[in-house]
Image (cartoon, rainbow, N blue to C red):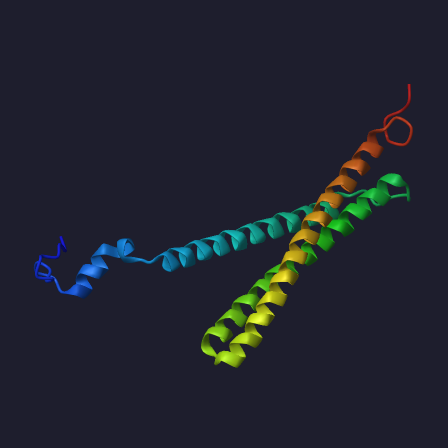
Length: 167
């Protein structure tokens, strides 16, 4: 144990060893805030990669299985769903690209002088706005793509236009 005696000396350890052994006890609030921000960034990146991968898999499945026969409402909705999901994939890829540029600009800002830091922080602010826009557009395209797919499937089974004969 690194208990400090009344004289200010630790029992058998130098001060660096005591600080290393205490670990998180010696961290400041700003260190903990930095750790929380890093954990949040990692979680967001994992979510972005997951959503992108799932959307790409859905696009591949729809491209393979959609009926592209005679032009009708079903084919129109199926094609629209595929195009909307492809737009969602594009927005997801752009969001990941912008996030990489944010990390690059942050690294440059930390290594530059005060004038360069201001410029790089302005870039970070602009890139953050762009990342947020791509985030929302990705989800909007994803939602409308899935709604178009469901509409196409409902039209396909309706008694008047689909493959189920009217009785």
